[in-house]
Length: 204
Ligand code: MN
Image (cartoon, rainbow, N blue to C red; front, side, top):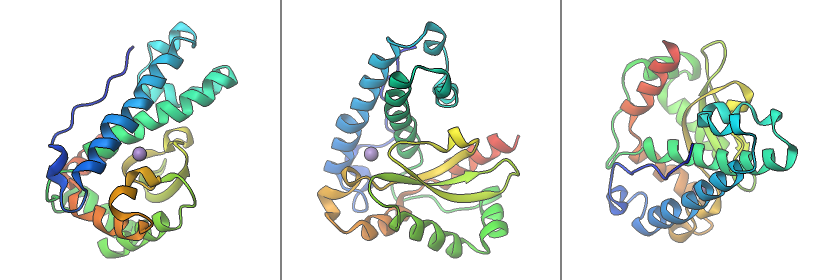
């Protein structure tokens, strides 16, 4: 299996003014591409059966790989997984939240605004480079969690629904040190229909 950069559903400038064109272009065509290239190179050093796995399978079988290859695949496979979901969850101008995802957010966080606050506060407190995720746990309950580097919730048996990249490369060109502004801005471009479809798949 050779991995490729997934096609974006929008042009680089279509997430403006919330996510600027230059950051999207560099983040996608340079940073994300590097993780894909590195992942493909690393897989040539992994046992054959690892090359036939899906990315999700690969990320939950890292403990079966030699340590040096496993670390590289955790970083670059995790990077490819997280960034693919990151791009997929966006839509120009955003889409309003409704359906099952809203129902479960209200059940597990009290209200949408309480969820937003919990998620944003966690993202703001994520020290160094990492991601903040909305996940479904083994009891079908929603949770927000932080991971560092490119570690994914898949390894913890959690199902990822949406996420924010808080590595500096995700926001520094426009927001510089103002990570909180990037996190506030991010809410304007989410495609809740897509996030809801991920949830429905996991609940099936
Ligand atoms: Mn990134």
